[in-house]
Amino acid sequence: MAYAALPTMSVFLCALAFILYSSPADADSALDCCLTVSYKEIPKPIIQSYKKQVRGEGCPRDAVVFKTRKGLSLCAPPASEAKWVKELTKFVDIRLRKCQEIKFKGKRCEGLNSTV
Image 1 (cartoon, helix red, strand yellow):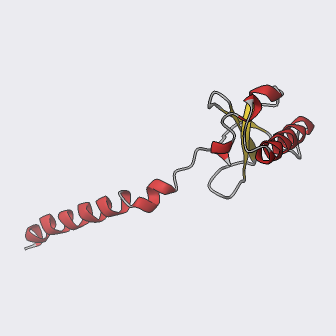
Image 2: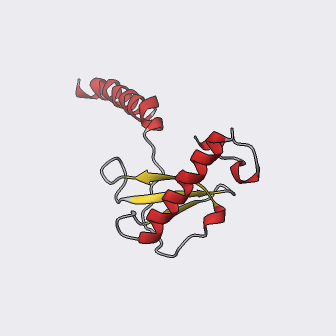
């Protein structure tokens, strides 16, 4: 009698596992996190944008992720840990604001409007 319930239970557990692992919410929650950061300064001309990574929002550490004009993501320490990071984020913010004012025309603003 116990052997008859075993296939039914196996099918139920497989279906449950499939539902849990194929949930669309899980696909959206996959994060690309910086696990380590580099304290080496990044040259201003190669940076296109940045975003802040916050510990506790799915990533193990605080960081600033700079996106280069070639599409690379470079992980830097938070601005509170490195003065150059604070200066670089301020530079990017000013450039973005100026490009918004001129409606993203000019070589310096190429690719910036797609990151806003």
